[in-house]
Length: 347
Image (cartoon, rainbow, N blue to C red; front, top):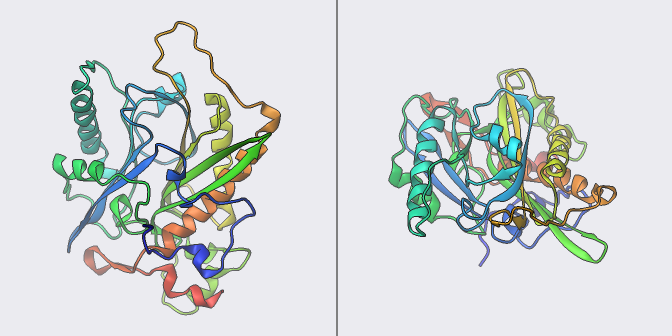
């Protein structure tokens, strides 16, 4: 049974022209699952989001790439991802000051999982990404324990919740409530069907610049609420999965097009904003012991549908992160309103 959250398409806002996947989420790519752990109390509005690309990815490594649009971020593991063109870790999202702690949790979890299969882990490249939720969350109060991380792992499923949940609990987007959002696109190349899905952790951009389907939505909202002038800063993490057979270099090319979806909503990515994209393909795993590995890859001249797919899915995922999030009163009484409160102004 699908969850009952209302998403941006439920408000007659259509992003792009491509066909959506069944759930319209990153998990439309077979094998991908997402789970959350949320902290929601007087002082802390934060959490952990666990993205599992495949079962025991340390044993079944995937082709991967990353792209840093603006490097104001504290993500771990991307140097090796880009050097080797592969991912051997689940991807975990959290707040800025919890990256080190959550990385340790991820290392311990991977060792435990590998020991069950008698796999000895002597080196491991954990991938943890962050945004700063300090406006709503007392970010200096580190509030996670290992069992909390395991709860996020245990929560992993295909039809996961979006909005102010998990790592998205304390995030802000375009001056409103941000967080976790997802979307997917399907496309055909020759006679084969492929899927590309996106998950974002949105915590970026200013309200005055928010543009939805060409409408200056942010300016209309500012007319209704008192809003302190703010810079375009924060961060957004874009994670994408696809079952399209690619090289790491081709994934990096696809990654670069996520910027289109971010820009279409009005962000110009200021100095203090970190925009980081991480992508992987489930079409080939790299656990073969053969010295020479044979893989299929897409012909470069046929890659345009994937470029359009990530642009559309990123734009819609950001809007889904905002529309599914509820109003949050956070640390020191700071408030972020939901886009739902104002959607009637421009639909």
